[in-house]
Amino acid sequence: MTMAPMAAAGRLGNAASAMALPVGGAPRDPVVESVANRTEQTARTAVSAEYQAQRKQIRTALFEQIDPLKAATTPRDKLQGQVDALIRRICDEQRLQLPAQEERLISQQMLDEMVGIGPIEPLLHDDTVNDILVNGAHQVFVERAGKLELTSISFIDEEHVFNTAQRIAARIGRRIDEANPMVDARLPDGSRVNVITHPLALNGTTMSIRKFMRRDLSLESLAERGAMSMDMALLLRRAMEARLNVVVSGGTGAGKTTLLNAMSQRISPQERIVTIEDAAELQLQQVHVVRLETRPESAEGTGLVNQRDLLRNALRMRPDRIILGEVRGGECFDMLQAMNTGHDGSLCTVHANTPRDALARLENMVMMANMQLPLAAIRRQIASAVDLIVQIERMRDGGRRLVSIVEVCGMEEEVIQTQELFAFRTRSISASGNVVGEHLGSGLRPNFYTEKAHLFEQGGA
Image (tube, rainbow, N blue to C red; front, side, top):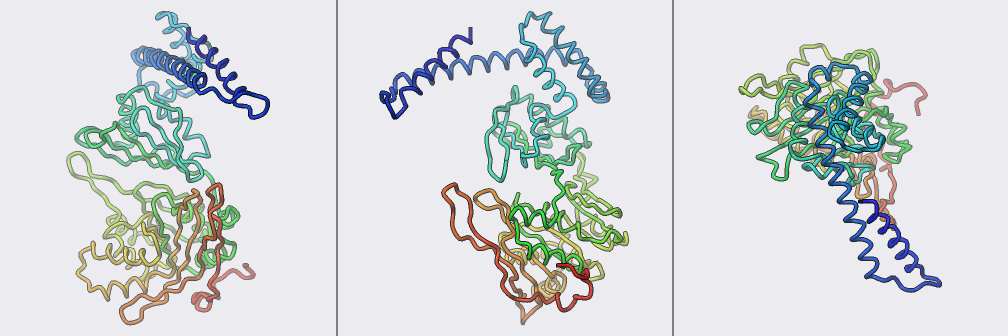
């Protein structure tokens, strides 16, 4: 019954298209076009509602017959056969007439429910997607190439989204409910998940997934993509070889972790590296890497292990370098202490809009450590510990670019002195909205080129 309106919509749509031809045709008839659009939309809505009802009916019957615990430990291919057989039996028993293609689709969706993360599981395997944003049951956005777009994917209802969120949290021993409406979790592939639900999320359970990128990007490949110039890539390579302490600064989703991964490839495999993160995202290629991850407090209010605790412990682990995923609080003081006491070549990221803002953020975070230090002493600590600030930005066209590389040159009176070595200059915005510009060098020679030239690879250019 639903096919006739769609066919009619197709015929009306073709007729409307013919009327719109500028040569040899009559002007477009707005009445006919409006009728065609409404008819097609009505047909699509009816088909969608019927499909969702059947899907929910099959899902309910299926989950009544399958043990979730056994399903979680059954190999996927074997489970697939069992689910296929059950769906065919359910359709026969409930007299649901579905084409074989729809049965296979529902079977795949049910399998994703049991061993994956439901309707959004296919997005995890789409390498063009960077972020998955679920705003309630019927709105799923993705970010591709730095731009958000609405997908056709939806959950059955709010309960479906909430159950998916609970399953994600339970896998890592955490829970989400009205008493604990916010949780940070990690998927088996390393993707980072933030969930917030009722009563805090008014439009339904919301999930934000930052995908674990499988691409192994180097500084040179980032330069080829236009994120930086080859001269900037060379500078960063030499900075790592010279064991400079580097702060990567930028906004949310700017690409700080990607840049950190690329820079870390230049660390010697003979060094012992300790990484500290809230949610493990770094993909270091070296052999000797110790990965530490924070732990939130339990429902009873105990068991909290924050970055400062891990950083203090890391100093007792004989690290050559420490990589702190993101500095956000009192651990900044401990990080600066480590940089100043034999852990050269350490890396960290910070949320800031400019290199000068990054320095101010470091000052504020040291104050959060309650060490009661005067501002001048804090600035001397920062100037002594930090060698380079790399600013990365996600621009209006969605492209991630290094917009500034600044060298910290020490103190003059009570002001931290810096010099900008490279910067991105925007020339114009193209008709398609792309940013047109170039990376330019300041012409200044980095101080560390002279101080640590003996540490560079011979012939590296």
